[in-house]
Length: 64
Image (cartoon, rainbow, N blue to C red; front, side, top):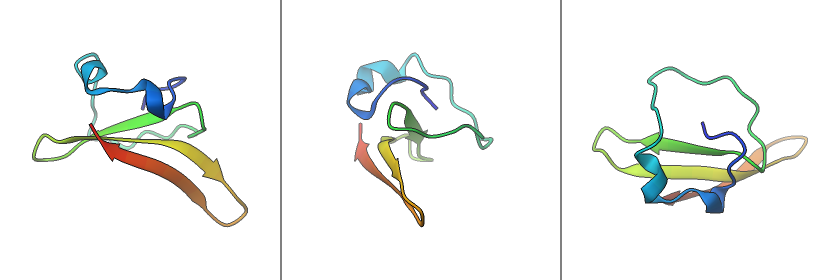
C-alpha cells in the first residue's frame, strides 16, 4: 500500500523501495493512493484511481 502516491506516480523504478507483506492491509483506498502487488512469479502490478459509488468500487490496474 503506497499512501499519498497516485496511480501514475508508481513505476517499476519505485518497486525496489517498497516493503511487501503477505498479510492484508486494512487502510482506506482513495484516488490518491496506490497498491502494488507482487505475484508468485515475481511480476508486479499496480492498482489505483479508486472511485467508490453506492454499490461498487472501480479502479485501474497495470503491469509494471
